[in-house]
Image 1 (cartoon, rainbow, N blue to C red):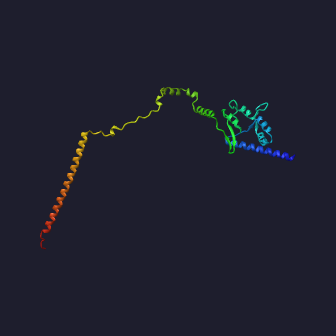
Image 2 (cartoon, rainbow, N blue to C red):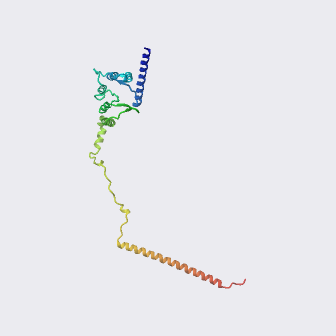
Image 3 (tube, rainbow, N blue to C red):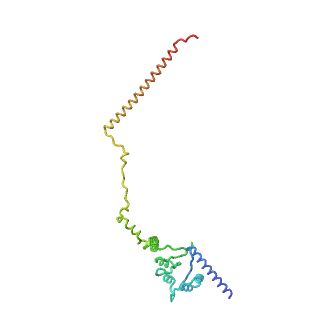
Length: 239
């Protein structure tokens, strides 16, 4: 008798420890205080499953009991759907491994779903309809209240705004031509000939000047050479 009582006490302690660990894990996952609940329908279902689910039933008994008032008891999935039906007014978070139940809960708004895997506990992604509702809620929270929109300064500002908002449309910039001041004018054929003749005359003048300079340098060298010869031919005077 003492052995059976000790085993029952150990099982109860293990169930309490498992419930506490689950509550702590959920608190860390959700970032706040968490309270665990079950329903009479779920407890009776676990008890009816026999010894294979005895540990799970013992852990469920450690949780607070939400009175669903189903008589006779309903299947656990129907019981949970009844609890969150009508917009989930009591803000329940449903933890279940039932894939069919997860799919049904995903079609509802404001019903977060938790499930376990080999990697731990996970929070299911909200459905697209819920994401749209969340986005609309954020937009409404950032908008000005109606009593502020009805204030006189905002009314005056609305009247000052232009009614035609076509100016807000994107306008493609037109491709502009080159700057006319930076573009050289095209020369006519006669002007090109005159410019070419002027260039040739300048080149000829430069060549003539270079030839005159060479001739002058040659004459200067010749004169200097003659002076040196005359000096060598003069007799040197006696001392």
